[in-house]
Amino acid sequence: MIEESEKLKSTAEDKASHLADRLVPYTLGGTALTYLLTRNAVKALSVLMVDFSCALKLSMPIAVLSAMREGNKYNISVKGGRFLEAVAKADTVVFDKTGTLTYAKPTVAQIVTFAGKEENEMLRLAACLEEHYPHSLASAVVDEAKNRGLNHEEYHSKVEYVVAHGISSTVEGRNVLIGSYHFIFEDEGCTIPAGEQAKFDGLDPQYSHLYLAASGVLAGVICIADPLRPEAAQVLRQLQKLGITQTVMMTGDSDRTARAIAAQVGVDRCFAEVLPEDKAAFVRDAGAEGHTVVMIGDGINDAPVLTRADIGIAIGAGTDIAIDAADVVLMKSQLSDVPAAVRLSRATLRNIHENLFWAFFYNAIGIPLAAGIWIPLFGWKLNPMFGAAAMSLSSFCVVTNALRLNLFKMYDASKDRKRKMKKVETAENTVSDNVLADKNESENKEETKMTKTMKIEGMMCGHCEARVKKTLEAIEGVEGAEVSHENGTAIVTLNAEVADDVLKQAVEVQDYAVISVE
Image 1: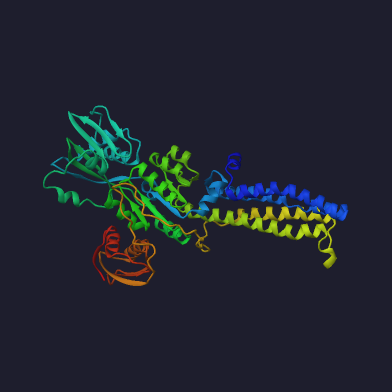
Image 2: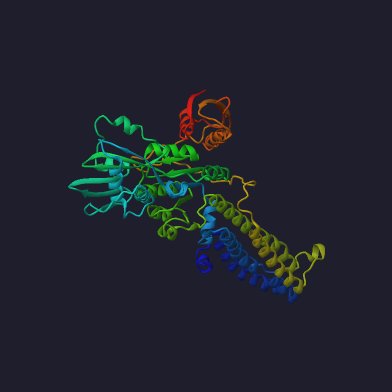
């Protein structure tokens, strides 16, 4: 890894290394010039001995390697100094949903049948199709069938896997499909049975949905529960506090499911029913507008966009191809490592800039002193022995400063501060025809504090209060919430405009009834 990281130097590290190389001829020239002007070998040797190129050469790679060592100590694997610098400069973070914002340990929560189909028979058919598909949702279907004791021996013909869409096969002469809404209804043109539109519209939006169709007609919907990581909303708030100007969630799930999850975690923008090429298009367009983009994912479908993004971050529990494509790997599979990586990267760049400053400051004083410039004014001069000692001391100081990164507390959010970002003129991003619009209104709206009072039914105890409070405060634009189960109210303080429907939907996803928002 050390050898590879040396090939992937950051821009600052590379510039410092080239600067040190270019300074050597100037130092030799200054030594020769000093001797020609003064005919004093002692002064010439002092200039030669006080040169700081060694300090520059040593400090930069040591700072980067110290940061990489510190990251590895907490199971954050960075594949090169170049990526540390890119993470530090990032202003846009894109999250995949399944396996990134969620645990990727889905379970079947509900099976809704249509056209008079029997529930277990639809589960048996779905398990038969999904049995060999390498995806967590497919595993959830197969496991549920096993738990119910359903024998799902293969009785279908050849299975056709459509990447990021679903599965197509033939069973008893009927064409059977299972997959996403986009695949079933838009690509394949399947229909909902007559008189059952209301049942379809009533599907719970908090679940991911697998749609099963036979002979062009919807036969069942398998509702998959994939719990959010408990730290997800907090991680989003920390990234925003660190100055990340745009947090984005992209998922292949339906519009309703995507919006429900987005409201819980508090992302700035969310896109639903997207394909791998749509994610790559978003990252490409954002980069063209001047943004530095971090992509965080875990699956095979995420690999192309992980390589296209300025920095690809893979979840350690993800697929091998995603880990191989990524620039940073979170080996503990914890989202809290993302803001920690941002803090470490910025501390590394700050450390490099400190070393550059002190090295130049040292030479701005040391070289004129060694050349005897200050003798006429102050009588100061530098013996070559002290020059050699000063040169060694400069190397010692910058290396010691670089090693301070080993003591850096990357999980301490108390000192988080926004980094000054370059102003970027952005155009509206278009990913594909089925991409959702921005969750928020214009980012340039002037912030004004206001309060809204929500009447809520169903809260029974302090735990309910904490649950509603956490959900509301995870929404972008919500500064705080005071919740009382006794009064059945939540007083929400806003620092930006938040639609009533967003507040209502976020609470109702937690199984509480919102009576009014005033």
